[in-house]
Length: 418
Image (cartoon, rainbow, N blue to C red; front, side):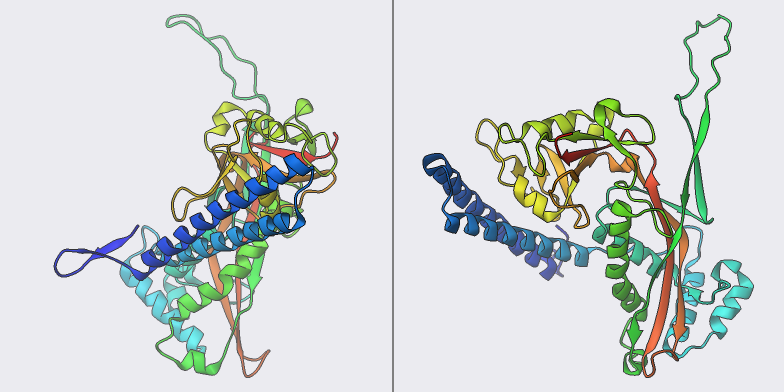
């Protein structure tokens, strides 16, 4: 945990550290209560073929409390995060000039400072649709917070581009290679067939509103205010698109691609394993299908793999035990870390489908290699004091794309017979 030293050289914990420690201790205590009551529920099933409804309801209630406490821990961890300051190659003086000019524009609509910077460097200019780029530290703060709030972004590869589309070539049959001796002739290898993946960026927008009193208050950090107002809206839209987006004016989600049973997998499709039961795990050996899902992924991908599911699916898996009676779901080992399932981190994404007939409610894979998020450099703000008087609107936009870049790296668990 972060700590600071006082004038006597003694280490002093910050209030955020104390909040984190207290929240984590409460989370662990609740988990012990959950295990105790779930053990009682299991014994009731074994002895009476059915659990007492009161016990089952209590287990579910404690499970929901665990979810809420985990969200509190995540929020505290986010508050402790500190954004990076600017990009390499941009002087501190230029950053300060841009920050001051941008603040004048936001507070009173004075564009002169930003226009002057536009003449110096086109990188600060306004687009055809109007608006100005936010200062780089504000853009960095938005990106950092999105990585914490947007679950898929936090585990995917993220690449910044300056164009509208990222094109990524790849060899369909793998690279052309061959064995050869030190002095032997180098025979020509078979030509590899190249194809191209395209990741277009689409516009994502938010429109926070401010009062005149807020803009006139010199104590208010307007950069931080804008970042705070749009971060949740951007994260929610991104989270939905990275999972279910159809690629039309939005990123393409990994569940939107063609899905085939893993035994028939081919490039361009996402492989899945069926549970064999519509809308449920198998009646016996419930955890076996999870083991099969893990080992459906090649060893090179398993090293950095994550489970992705929503909180309701996680609540179902939280009750599972292995053959030795140990819970397969384990709480986070430290504040700010993720829960574990069979030794792999669990990423909670609310936009994943619930367990239902033929639903692919669980994903498992190396999303760093499997899914690519494309950010076009620059977040723009257009000040609008006319559309909603007496409020001032700030039309804020950024361009984001995304899609699968390696179809071998992600596997799905389908709750269906086939």
